[in-house]
Length: 319
Image 1 (cartoon, rainbow, N blue to C red):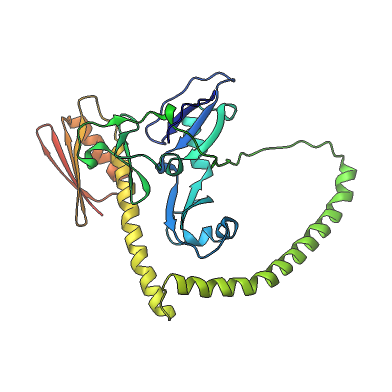
Image 2: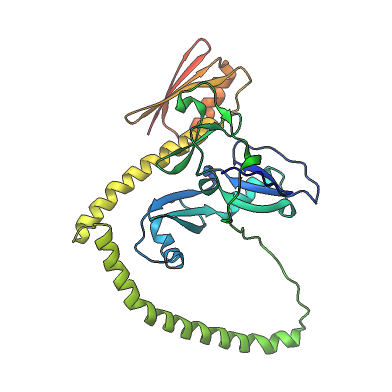
């Protein structure tokens, strides 16, 4: 994980909520480690031999898991497991823009899951968040959920980065010096050519993949111990979908809670999940802050009850 080698690029941690606004010259470069808040990750076993084959199945790995959005996919293999990723290109670009990071300042972009996989224990990644590993997955939580009072700050400058990077998609426009007569001549020719290529390519791909898809489907059923009937599988899918929906709600509510604008003296002292109720305690809250919190929760359509005792606020949110 750690190395004495250093390049000219500074390594930073990019989070969409708690971020630093940088002031960079054109020559300065950054190696950017993406917060787990900027991607989804699954640790899975895929019954294929190569990473190239596994990439073809990535979208199905996240089927029924992701919230609505335009996702890109990536993965790497570690032992018998594949770590599969789904991320929204525009969400990462927005986080870069909020942090005042230009394209010219980006050296490489990495997943925290890959670059911080060797951490042992919990570390403070910024003033509001703690990062640690559980069951092989890099997690990001507020300090109050881990229970300890003090955390060692994670020194990113000593991390030896891997070769696993991602490339973001930027919108580009090109100007071509084509006359009107050229366009009139090219349009019908290109249209016929494109339609012909699309037809033959689709025909070839379909004929080649039909047998392969059937075979892989059978292998997936056997290796994942799926039930023999569609009704049984749908029932099992519904159960796991409900579990995932509950986890998505918890994640969304925690994100909202951690984005509250609190004063220096105000803070979240406790977060506890009890059954279907998320209990949150805030200390030293003023009446203005209590009103602000209620407006934020109402705007997010989050069902809650609130109890205020002097300068203490207790929220109970239904999951």
